Image (cartoon, rainbow over all chains, first blue to last red; front, side, top):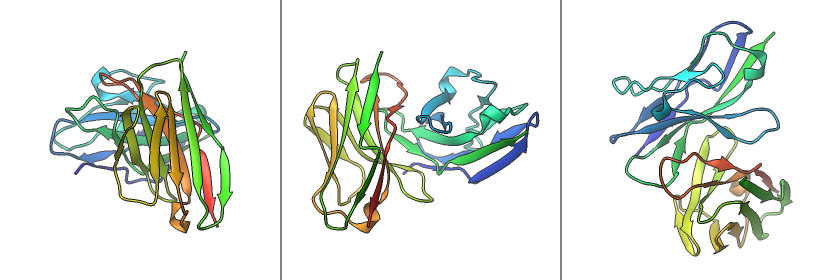
Length: 111
Length: 113
């Protein structure tokens, strides 16, 4: 069975500091991984996905199959990055959007 | 553009009472639909998903059920609520094919007293 672990429930950094939100997964097949974000008073929404290999709002995430990790990184955090972040895994081989989510990390960026 | 509506936003119900949460999607056809729950201190857990009218798959055994009477309508129900049913319920949709992201509703905060 697949599992997603986000070891940090809370993460605090100062503006301008680098930030890394950790995500580890357990899955025997070929995973698809995502980061979702929920800003205050907004809906949960997709931030980025590993297959796109894109940078969104300065965030990047690299899939490391050897370490089974998909950590989210940003070199210089901004106050507007404060939000709840969820790492999610989609089982390969289906067209459904069934995702397994981690417990989430609340990021607070202090001025 | 596509929109998803979920209601009510908050709900307080006594133990043993019935439950009905509704979710509708606009601006798309044949979506996949999902119900997720976030219990206190836990991540989002998939409860049900549906790939078409009347087609419901349950991910975890529980006191809840789901129905899809129309293409863009998804309902979460219970005949008798338990205290453990308290949580934050999210409806979501995705397009039928490909690696589509999930689009979430605003959620319903359910408190069972």
